[in-house]
Length: 45
Image (cartoon, rainbow, N blue to C red; front, side, top):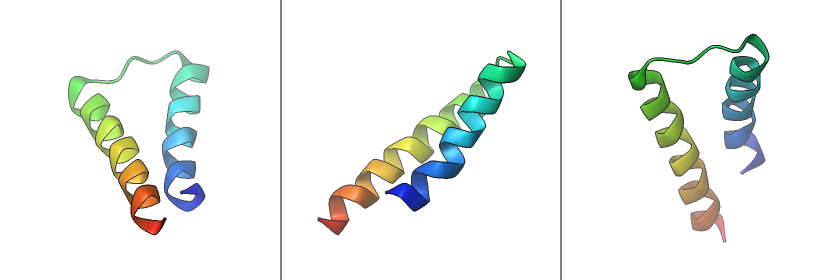
């Protein structure tokens, strides 16, 4: 899970630092990436 979640966390942290609210398409993409990271982590167990 660490390999899949690191890029997503980097994007979220950079959005918080720059105080940018992304468009709905980007929010949906981030949510899908987080969901897929958790599914990959569950599959490995």
